[in-house]
Length: 527
Image (tube, rainbow, N blue to C red; front, side, top):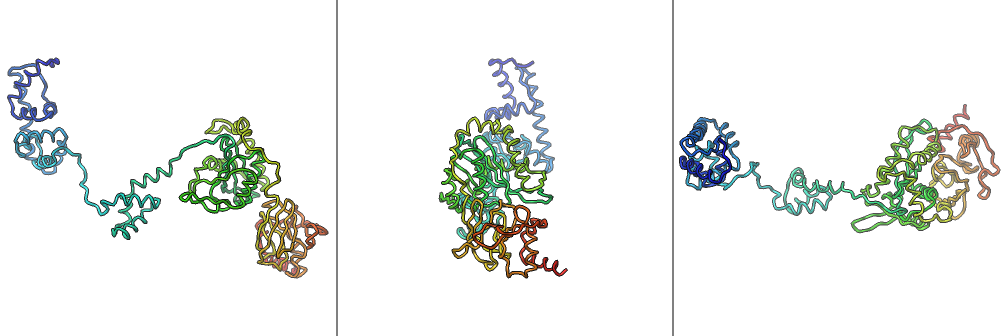
């Protein structure tokens, strides 16, 4: 019969039973382990206080006697496994309680069915401890603070820490030893590098600008394309331009086109640390030096240039994501008949896809968000000509008596080979000077058209006349036919010149030196 919770029944049960066996009396007197041992051996509480209750002691004594007998015949491996199973906090507490009652370790081991060495171990420990591999004294003990300081100062370079341990502390250890010691701090560095706090800018506050590289098939050939992506921080509206190079002039040209497209100028423009824009950036010394031309461009249009932290492009994550979006959505897997077709496609894609998509972060269409709030927050676009309308460059004359400007080639007298010349680029003209005098004027060709403009007389004396005529005929001009003008520095290009339909020349062939042309023309004359 189960015991009904009754405070009067419990004392009668405990007095009769505990008096019949000293082991149970000691366990009860020393700790709370009595209840655990009692339940473990299958004893049940009963309200009887007569001989029937005393008979319940027989299974207990038989279990203790059986455990002792089995312990005597167990092998060392079996005894070790049995000890591991018995080593619980409650059993250890029972061992300590019996020890306090004056029991010897062999008697305790016999009664509890464990090894005497187990009893000795827990007597020495004074309590239960979780099993673990014993730790040996290490050569780096006592150096934790010093190692952590140096490891963090060297941005996680364990090998430098190993070298300084040998030079400053006289401790020679392997690299693997240092790596094991700094592993917890390496995890901290990784977490710190990944941790990012998202922030939003108010309307008209910030424009993020970045370049990205990709490849596309243009006119049947695989070509590298440099994409300049400009993203307004509030509305996420994009302007995308494609160039053959990532040069400073392309950065500035793309920003001017973006300002005109949005009919306004943001308060700030955030760049990465491209060498074309930033001369020096050291956050530790709070030093940031922009290129002089970029500074002048920012003053001209009235915005403040900013640069993200070095090697932390996520500072301008809105534009970084925009570059990837343009690569995978606008360009990837497409073919274009010409470079002009690529530019027209990007214009159409920006208008019909990027501006009207539902943005994942804002949950709105960029063009709607722009028209509602950001368009009015931009600074009014000043009524100014382009900052790039006139600029001065320095170039070195190549072996083919040409200089390269904006992805096109312009000729100079061949006597200036390897000389440094000054180039004044105007809206419709490229003027070349040397030693304070103008040596050539060319009509300005649209950027990155890969064309050569050669004025008559610049190659005179370099090759025989017969070969010179054929060489001039082999070069196409910007508008298709060859335009060879006089070498006069006052008349415009092609003035008095003759127009001839030239053979189609591949872009890759236009960069060949004049000696190659002369050799091929010589072969044709000989034939």
